View (cartoon, rainbow, N blue to C red):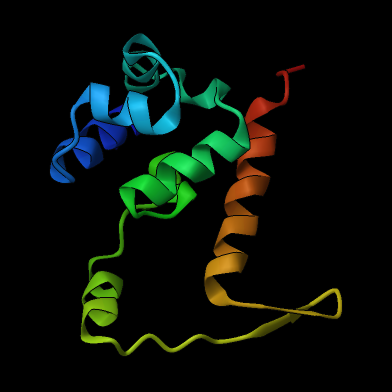
Length: 115
């Protein structure tokens, strides 16, 4: 699925207008429209995280790097979220944090200029 489709679909599924997102993000409606047209790759990572939180999805889902896991959403609704802590660099990371780290790596790689 193309990432811009994802953003538009997520926004509509959450019942937000372009203006709603623009106001919540502190940007113009035109900016949100550009993100939906595929300019999301040029967004600052903290904006991606903020937008993902607003739409209640992982940044990786927003960027189109992974699809929204339906079964996880049902688990959260049922309140049976089990967090598996993984050890990495002496720090305990949750499954969700590790997903975000992976997503951020992909984001950094996507910004690299093709040589």
